[in-house]
Length: 55
Length: 451
Image (tube, rainbow over all chains, first blue to last red; front, side):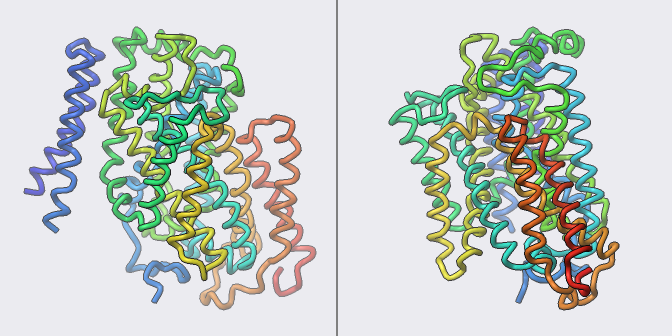
């Protein structure tokens, strides 16, 4: 469970960087990247507090 | 019971592995201030080569200070700065140092309230401050700052432990958002590949005239700023409180994570946001992190500005409260922190500290760093690295000689400062001056048992 959460957390951070890089490369528009970053942010904060609840 | 080891050395069983210090420093140096400092580099007319070389060398010098000045003292004594100052130079000096520290902390926290208020300005119709604004810009601005300041103060007064938890969680995310902000700014500046960045760097960091009211930055300004912006922590030995928990002296290299991510990547990313703003409208010179981050990453960027400002201001208000509380321990810490928060909020209404942050940070280092010179002379020269086994045998305190050295060094630096010299240039001279004065006074004028 902890490993799964950790993978999701890393994936959410990678999403922020990846979507920003996609804007540089022209694969995503700025608005699409903003939306991806927002979702990734929500996942990051939600996932970060899950281990604390189980402690 | 001294469970935080506030008065006693940290025992071996309470010491931590080096890896923890890397993450701690990386998080601590991705703060709200970075959103102001990056843009102010562009406002100061810095050139691309000066910026990159200045950051590389200045940050390296800062890391070397942590590793070879602060870390050896921390590993030898395992005490907080305050406790070691108390033992070596005397309790009264610590009280004066605390007062200076608290005043500077209030101004720093005030600038973070200003930064966070700019994020509210994205959604609220208020007049935002410009680069040259020194006074509050209107009733709306005052109300927003008052609201944010009150919120920060209440959290700090109630104990900031869960804010510290949010800061821990947010730190890696903030670093990534800083990076994301910088990356999405690149296409708007005409950069689509690493080759473009090298070619167009001179168009982004032009090296031209500074904007009105800002000091012109050269390589030396960037280098000394990067070296000395945390001088209170390395030259001034404020981080004895952290590094004394390190198992190995290798933890002294850990600040490199904070320097090259927070004070390298984050500053460059923040300056790119400002470059985009200036390119869109050269007349819009206001350094407003909220709108800049909103333009880059939308709500994620705004949230990053708020959290960065909040997680920097909160412990700063808390520490300032503790510093004032130490002056009068009979007062309630809760009420002291409320009072400190009120001062911070009023300072936050005046954009001067935030807009002149580059000068303020240098001043902060110049005033506080010499305290570390006293400990460095005592440890490396007078004691030759030998630490007494029993803290009761440290010896008589230096007393007035430490005040004389500190004030003498500051007085010498006050002359060039009053003539307009960049404050970061004076941090190292202030430190060296204090060290030399203290060494002379201790070896010539101190009673025999002190020498």
